[in-house]
Image (cartoon, rainbow, N blue to C red; front, side, top):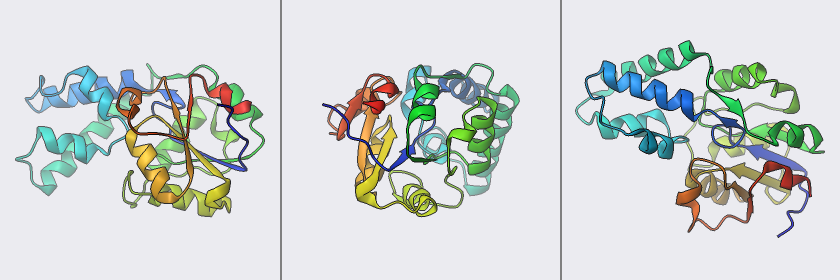
Length: 211
């Protein structure tokens, strides 16, 4: 199915624009080892959870942790992840060309913090393609629609003119709740879980958005 052009595009980051799983899985594995639970999450399970908030992932492994301990766990993870400096992360094929050629306003809609998102986009030469960078700072996380709605507000976008592009079930659900169309990427980390998610469109390569 040919994907029509939209005036506004919202993009997930991990698993959609960036193949960041090697850095994320390594950081989670190091964290689990530091806290004495190295076998708690196999790499494939960590990949499956990319896009969820860290709290949701760590709560399953550390159900005995209180709020203060959970917050320290998250801060430890972020320190480990930052120290990796995205050394094993790569831009997915077709992403740069698509962002450069897409004649529309674009924003991110990601679980990452806005500052972190801006920095990683800058590092990989993608920041200038976006009219707005939106992370989940203080907002409910996907599948709640808040980060999408905040990005749309910044762009001046109406739901019927907007396409969300993501790779996970939470992206699909957040798009539905925001009233926007959703395009799922088959190369992403959550593609296997999306079989019954019924996105409006699928792409094998992001360049298919260009028609």
